[in-house]
Image (cartoon, rainbow, N blue to C red; front, side):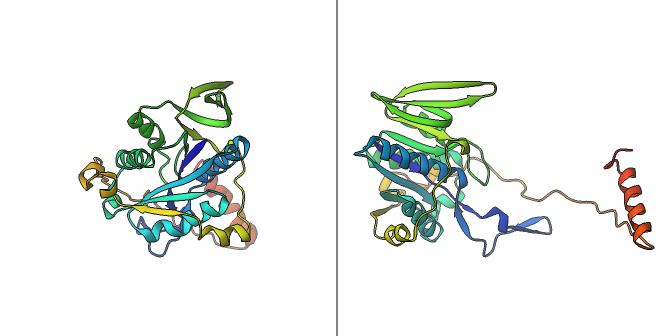
Amino acid sequence: MDIVVSVKTNLDLQMIRIKNREPVLEAIPYKTGDLDKNAVEAALQLRDAVGDSKVIALTVAESNRKVRETIKEVLAMGADEAVLIVDPALESTDQAGVARTLAAALQKIGSYDLVLFGEGSSDDYSGQVGPRVAELLGVPQIGYARKITAGGAGVLVERSMDEFIETLEAPLPAVLTVVSEINEPRIPSLMNIMKAGKKPTEEWSLADLGLDPAAVASSCETLSNLAEEQDRKHVMLEGGAVDQAAGLVNALLKEGILGR
């Protein structure tokens, strides 16, 4: 069973600060998406259970710098090889453009049985890319997977839907999106980190996939990316500690934050 895992590189959101209601992105490090790590771990466990399989990490970005280090982390986790789609035109793309790029890359890879995605990305969590890729490839898609088992000529997927547990079966090839409950991603050992740089890694451009920039151009326009405006009360508490505590409680009661 050959498994391809889509891996997205995100800005580390915990490192972003807000200035004048706008995010400051300079010098913010990149990291592999949390749910993408769950997808990688699921692929590795399937590979080990089935045997005679390989895991390919697939990622897209506008620059090599953005993905080189994060893809090494995925290779250190245990992925066998990586394919990087790097092109400046991808800087302004949207979910539809990413899906077209990934679908074209999968067609170029040629041989695969499963394609795994995180259910959503750490930055916008749209949950669109996996289903869009499945539609473009014309293959079955199952979302919200919390358990995956290979069986017969297909795959069994268990997922939680409100009060029910569903078990679905799909023939191969298929696209699956996973949730965080599926596993706990492994932490790479020092030895595997050192080996990661020697694993096969290919880099393709949009032209290598037969795509031009217009094919991945965004159809969406961002009108605003401002943080919510905050109106501060500038309440000053005077007196000793007891008086200040009483004043704080009264202020919170007036705002309805504390119940009477």
